[in-house]
Image (cartoon, rainbow, N blue to C red; front, side, top):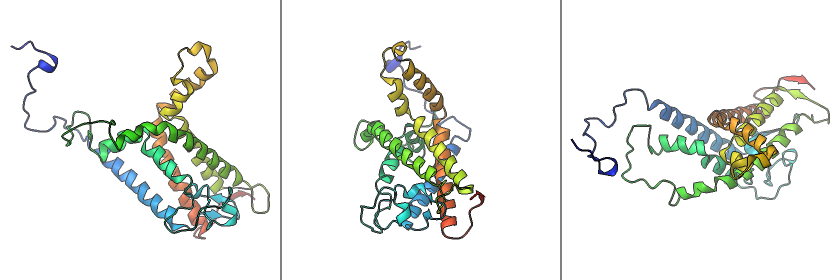
Length: 267
């Protein structure tokens, strides 16, 4: 009987199947593909539709068009000016959408999600992947995943803009205070965006990841512990925030197009 261990151990026994797992290990991957595909298709169509994104009467602006900086944006929706050309292939929110996409694309959780589902690297624990070689994130283009922290800073700033849009929506067209179902949906969406952004691994690292002595930085340590607690639910916030983004955009589109009327509580 061989006593060699480690790299000198005898090869594993040949198995008649690729894996001994008999559970439905592929279900999460199928759901991930379906969920991400639905969002990408919906968001792409809405971004380039370039209509029904602003409700003048209640100041509702969908996050997919914020900040609206195209010369094609209507007056009320352009809170920060209009300075990019109006073209069918240029999103009205071209200043923010690429960075939000890259923030989610390089997100630690999403990387795990689409690596396992779309890339099959690996598809699940104890399930072999179909790739002959593994290089990790050490070569182009995957090495670009390492700049996720910089996209976090940009996403943080854009979430502030979304918060501004949400607060502005409480003002009606005549300058008074208003509250409707759209405001509730906008608030829920902004809350989920903040939870997803603040629970980010990069945010946790910014707060305390490089500290050598927590006792000398009690405020940052307290913030680090709070964000660490949020970080445990980062996956949940990632999916819920995708859902609320679609929900608020769909609601604004339906109200703006006249398909439905906003349920008003005040004003």
